[in-house]
Image (tube, rainbow, N blue to C red):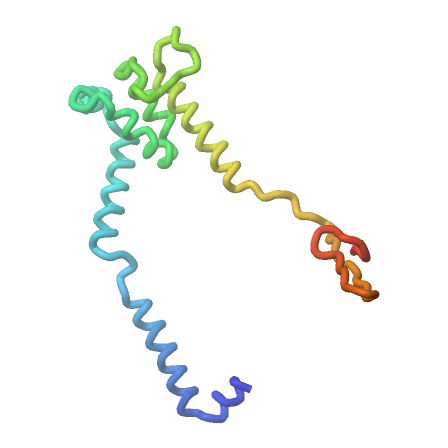
Length: 166
C-alpha cells in the first residue's frame, strides 16, 4: 500500500529519490577521517614502525628514563603482531618483573620473552572464550494442555511441559 502511494504521487517519489542521491554524493565527498583521527592513525602507524625497527641502544635509553616502558608497550606490540620481536629486544634490558606480576616460579629470573608469551596466550584464550558459541540445539520442545473442570489449570511452555515435541 505504501509503495503504491509513493508510485502514484510522483512529487514524494522525486523528493525521496533526490534526498537519496544527495546523501550518496555527500557521503562520498566527506572525508573518511577527521583531522584528529588522521593524526592518531599516523601516530599509531609510526609507533608500529618503531616497534618493528627499534634498536637496542634506543630502547636502553627509554628504559633508563622509564623502567616500566616494556610493560607499558608490550600490549601494543602484541596487537601489531610484533609481541615476540618486541620482547626479544628487551630480554637483556629488563630483568625484574613488573610490581603487579606474579610469575609461576619466583626462583627463576624474569624473562620478557616468557612474559610476552604468557600475555599472548592469555589474550588468545580470552578471545576464544569471549567468542565462544554454544552448539545449537537441534530440537525444540514445547506445548502443553489445559483443562476446565471446576477450575483452571494450565501446563506447558518453552523447554518442557507435556504435550508435543518437534
